[in-house]
Amino acid sequence: MEFSEFAARAREIEDESADLETVSLVADLLRDANDDLAVLARFVQGRVFPAYDSTTLDIGPSLCYGALARAAGPNVGPEDVEERLADVGEIGAVAASYDLGGQRGLAAFGEGSADLTVREVDSELRALAAAAGSGSEDRKLDLLFGLFNRCSPEEARYLARLVLSEMRIGVGEGTVRDAIVEAFDVPEEPVERALQVSNDYGRVAEVARDGGADGLAGLTLEVGRPVQAMLAQSGAVADVLEEWGEVGVEWKYDGARIQLHHDPTGEVRAFSRNMEEITDALPEVVEFADERLDAPAILDGEVVAVDGNGAPLPFQEVLRRFRRKHDVAAAREAVAVRPVFFDCLHADGEDLLDDPLVERHDRLIEQLGDGDEAAEGLSRLWITDDPDEIAAIEADALEAGHEGVMLKKPDSAYSPGRRGRNWRKRKPDVETLDLVVTGAEWGEGRRAQFLGTFELSVRSEGGFETIGKVATGVSDEDLADLTDLLEPHVLAERGQAVELRPAVVFEVGYEEIQRSPTYGSGYALRFPRFLAVRSDKPIEEAASLADVRRLVGDRS
Ligand code: AMP
Image (cartoon, rainbow, N blue to C red; front, side):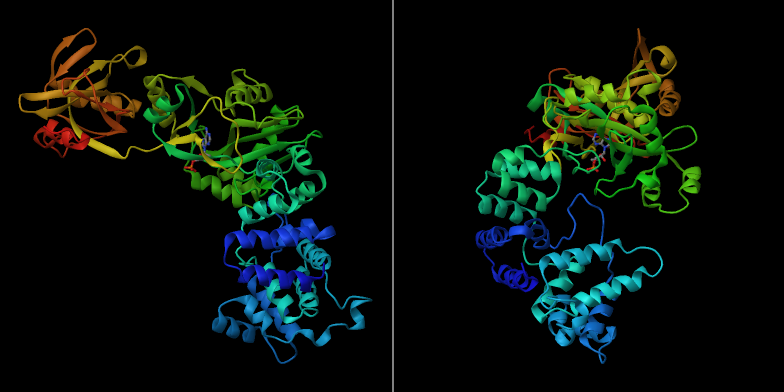
């Protein structure tokens, strides 16, 4: 297709405001694309490279203005382009405002070069992206000038927008997906699926046209080509237990997402959550894969920055390592990272996206090994229906310096790019109450000399009524401090349980308050978590039963 034809179609699409009509216009474009189908499916979204490909044109505005000015003639400078841009606010309109045709058809561009084709634009832009090293800026400028120089105003409008990733004709990924469905009469589901595994609209359009639904079903993951990461929604323990019965619980590591590809030749590549390649910045991850993986695999996980003792550091430290292009060895010296993997999308030639989480996790263990020393780098998955066990896992995660827990549906598939309901990150407590500590229990084992599991009460007319117990959120250091603080108030001891004079107020986070016969108040906190001692608060200012009734919405 000639580029002028693409520009005319893009104009038509831009002028159309109705979504359905837009889809139909894009479908027409795809149907008429012939050999240029893959390129046009990308261009129409303002892309030159497929989504999985982190290659960029690396054309900054000034290079684009420079090329445009040069093509506009000897009297035009980049400042003029910028001035017009300030006036009209959009680079396409600026490009279209020049008469760039002065050198069109010059013999210098070879035979038949007067009419720019979509294919030529694509190959020139790829050559431009490939320019690297010294002199590459000049080469980019020359190539882009060469293209602008052959553009009519309308072509220049869309070329300028394309190279600056500002297409803005109202065509998003969903539009192209729907247009592929319409143009080639294939069901939506296999198209969506093929897009998820390939991340390449151009390729999916071609396969839909040439192979229909069966062809699309044949598209598989490819080791070395990143997949969009599955994402999580916020959620509460109580809700997922109710919805799913059993829950897969994992530590939520405070780092940055990583996707590791280990191909059959043993080559390792690592990608960020945005599918950018970051292999060179993270030699530890490559070493990890070299050591631990034998078969081809795609693993999903998190990279955590660690201090000299292996304890996690804030996630900003990881990001610094991700962005590092030079002096990686020095950066590594300053902050080490280690990967922890929690999912396996492909193992030894098999795609696992549709397998249940628990089975994918088994495959992950198979890939990484399950021995003691192998436990490093493998995120453990607990399957449980016991809220106390979840609370204990969370407490351990927090104590180890991580963020909390992820809650995952045990039989769920891996949905690339989706922020679905099958993965939930436990919401940080949205609610807190200041409660009086009226009891505690002596710990066991190494915690035997400390008070733990604190009984919490609200004020009531007759004194205090219990509303729950809290053990989560208390670190080993806290235990010692809290024991010192509370021991002077012990009134009585029965076995491990102690009764305390109401004197100390805890700030406690929780997910929900439920009615419950277990405690004297008639209510129970779900997922209580110790946050702080309110040494500034006298017990008279702690929450009352009336406060709790109000929160729950019960009339007193
Ligand atoms: P957020 O970034 O707050 O939306 O939380 C989701 C992110 O948590 C994921 O994208 C991962 O980068 C990260 N994460 C840490 N640990 C896990 C885990 N065990 N499973 C899934 N994601 C995790």
